[in-house]
Image (cartoon, helix red, strand yellow):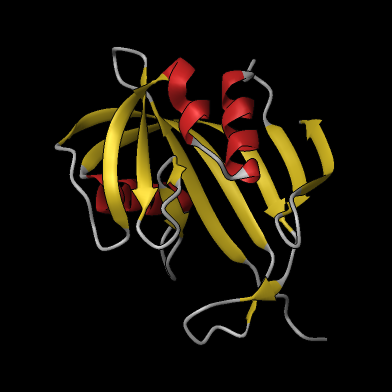
Length: 161
């Protein structure tokens, strides 16, 4: 039996004291997203998330609590020599800013604080919009969702756990 291969990632909904949400604009796609990314070998989820948020936005955060677990079970051809992108498992956390200064990176073209009610005006990717809505709807139960992003976004399973 071949060992399964998954990408593990974490996303952070960073909300400041003014009720604004941290968004970053991805350089490659031009899309606005909440910060996060892949966990590196030997790194735990929360440390990976703190690192990714800082790398993408310059903001230092403290991880508060888990709000969602997502499986993107679509497999598709990658870019930059990657043959096939495997299933992704993503964990979304609420985070509080504790320092740093807004900046950009090799991956991000912009970073900014956005009023909570304006975020969906900026986010176009269906999966990111769905995960942000789960953040808005959070009531103490963790959202679990299985979806695909290609050839088009579709939710295969959605439930609270």
